[in-house]
Length: 191
Ligand code: 5GP
Ligand code: MG
Image 1 (cartoon, helix red, strand yellow):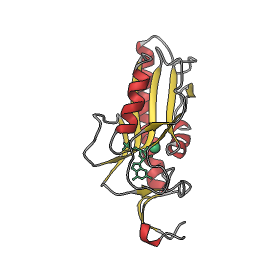
Image 2 (cartoon, protein in one colour; image 1 turned 30 degrees about the vertical axis):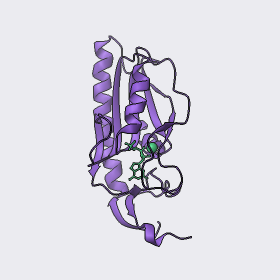
Image 3 (cartoon, helix red, strand yellow; image 1 turned 90 degrees about the vertical axis):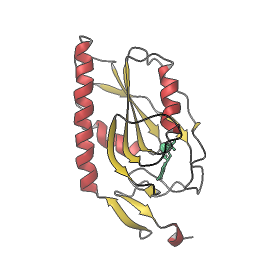
């Protein structure tokens, strides 16, 4: 779709297949948790999915439609790459935290796990509310040395340490609508 995304890492088909696989894993684990609690997957008010905005929006939109659970969404916004930047400036909470998470089964979903600061911050804020369980899922897991001590329970794909865009991931706010995940050639950007 965009010339300056020269190398495709994952196509629409590859992404869709992984999202389905991740949804099946998540549904299985949550169902087991709910059964342990004496609840069913159709009980209200037990499962909350927390997308980390804005990057997770496409991934989460696809994934939740593969989840046969009664769930609600609680958004959280975190910014770490303000403006035209390919280096993280550290995670900054840019919204209120969802409330009433005590006793709930929580799944945090983000586009990519890089330094780990974003998910570590969100995790710590959620744990203060005493959820029943907390799990993390990411579409991409960058093979880098983490700054924060964290790992994801569900991973779409592992990738090398390159700056990627598409499928929700942006550069300076753009390319989120690119349907594939690819590497941006920053030298050939239109001005
Ligand atoms: P972390 O806090 O783990 O370093 O970074 C996580 C956040 O940084 C992600 O939610 C994402 O918004 C952004 N990020 C990290 N790596 C990339 C990348 O390769 N491309 C884009 N577009 N965003 C990234
Ligand atoms: Mg993000």
